[in-house]
Image 1: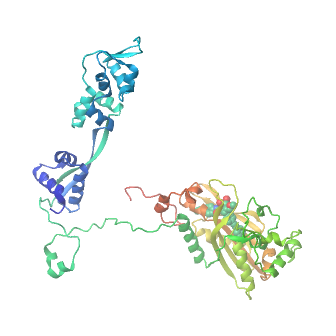
Image 2: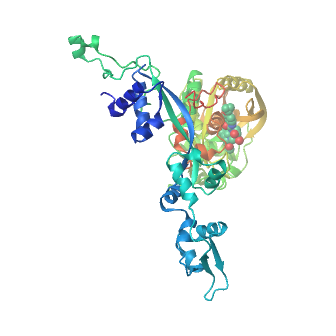
Image 3: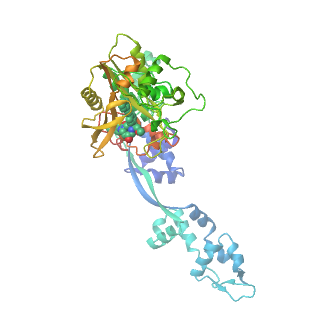
Amino acid sequence: MADGPVAELLLRRLEASDGGLDSAELAAELGMEHQAVVGAVKSLQALGEVIEAELRSTKRWELTVEGEEIAREGSHEARVFRSIPPEGLAQSELMRLPSGKVGFSKAMSNKWIRVDKSAADGPRVFRVVDSMEDEVQRRLQLVRGGQAEKLGEKERSELRKRKLLAEVTLKTYWVSKGSAFSTSISKQETELSPEMISSGSWRDRPFKPYNFLAHGVLPDSGHLHPLLKVRSQFRQIFLEMGFTEMPTDNFIESSFWNFDALFQPQQHPARDQHDTFFLRDPAEALQLPMDYVQRVKRTHSQGGYGSQGYKYNWKLDEARKNLLRTHTTSASARALYRLAQKKPFTPVKYFSIDRVFRNETLDATHLAEFHQIEGVVADHGLTLGHLMGVLREFFTKLGITQLRFKPAYNPYTEPSMEVFSYHQGLKKWVEVGNSGVFRPEMLLPMGLPENVSVIAWGLSLERPTMIKYGINNIRELVGHKVNLQMVYDSPLCRLDAEPRPPPTQEAA
Ligand code: FB9
């Protein structure tokens, strides 16, 4: 028989039954595991209309492990009673018995035994009655025999309170004949083989119906971390806007490109241990374009290009110090310097998305590293208006339309603006980034033409990812505490679409 002996038995019982049968009762009758019958029901269901099977959940009483043991060995109180000889038993000795503690108090409350506290060598326990009925064992055996209904509610709840009995919900099937019911079912073909076609035997062979609703086995595949899903969305946005990605394949940077080239003075607080991870080995950058370095030195110490500079003694050693880059704006500086070497000047749009490192106080939204997203546009006569315009275009593609700009300060941009957006879900204005126009003191020493200005902005990758995926603590997103299931189950990221609630079970 195609689907195994259980299915055969079930069909014959169904044939014999009037109306239908319950899978649990059939299992009990056949003395087999309910699961085996459920397996047969499922395989017969897959054959189409042979049977109808309606899932039912029935509550029934089952003995717990301790209940099973008592049904076999007797109740603790009964065992205590039996262990007391006519001359009594020292209470201390009785308490050492496995059922001692529990049994003693129950036997006492059943007035089966008594304690003589004044006995010579300490309290002694004696029988009060000659024999007793182990009602508990009897009742548990009743349940074990499937006659739980014989017990009264009170008796049942007492046994449940003693954790000897538990009510379990059993999912059973009420099986009835289907429209194509027969006790003999031939194996349904699942494959149309060349032989069948050449022999024509396919014409009279039953084929298993296709289940087009079957989900199919999810192919084992890699799973992109949510951060990488959002990163590819941001990349897509920049590429759509005609930006080119800057190389950022160096976490280690010199103080020169990370700070000095950006006209950030050497005594700026961000340049000390508290904000920046400096390197012990390799401690110093050896390769620096010295002619350009001299111009940066002069701009910092004496000024130039219409700027008074910072009037301090700029030190090359300080600029040589290696560190973990604190922003990808260092990569922008390198890219703009390379651009400046190419004459004549050509306008460019650059972007970068990569890791930056800051020795900051750690909290729920800050780790010592994050991914910075940066956009840079270099062209003739760009103004703050152009910056606001490109920011509107950029954030609109993120699904963020309501923007507000707040004056801010960065050592390397003047004017600078923090960018805020009104977040519907959070019902508040959220800072979504920072931006500004790079200072001439940064651009002219590179060799960029006078009338070329460069606008730029930056934000993090983690913040939008946390908001998109509803993650409140960055450690759930990044680091050793990340639960990989979150990565496996993380839905596709559509930045410009309202976050959809995770699919509910029945939809799944
Ligand atoms: O990402 C940030 N916020 C943000 C961005 C997007 C977003 O999307 C939601 C889906 C809707 C939500 C929030 N911020 C920048 C703002 C804050 O989170 C801020 O508290 C933390 N900032 C980081 C730095 O923290 C020390 C975010 C990070 C940041 C800040 C500034 C820059 C880059 C990253 C920059 C820059 C810049 C400026 C001028 C020229 C060139 C670069």
